[in-house]
Amino acid sequence: MLSVAVCGLLGLWFMVSCLKQTALPWASPRFHTFNVFGLLPNWSLFSSNFAAYNYELCVRYISTDGQSGNWIPLPSGSSRIQVPPIWNPERRIGKAYLDLALKLIQLRLLKRDHIQSSLPYLICLNMASAAPSPANGKSLEFGFFLQEGHNRGTRKLFFLSSRHPVNP
Image: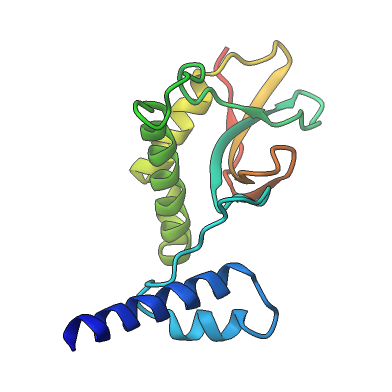
């Protein structure tokens, strides 16, 4: 009797999980409301819409005449290797970027005055300052972008630093 109840419960969970993946407009708010413990996964196995996001740290330089340059992504590690499911050292750099970005957002929400003296901000500033700067670069800013995994061209800025002078 217990095994029938467990099988029924797992079958119900499987059906609700599959229904959640269809992204029906009437069901989406209900799933979000009842998924308090996060038991319904967010899979996107056979779709071009991956359920993954990348956080990218970028820097841009402001020239002596005040014009902003293009955003330049900072290197995120070594080149892509062929066995990421088995060995993926780049994941640590992505995790570090995520941790830094979330901490900066948290600090911006809590202590807006002290964010520039915080360790995550100084780490990001150090990484941005270490990047090669153009000859006419007077100052720099860094920013964190959110990039959807399925659409490499679309980036959304969610943290922007203050301007900092570039040392010659």
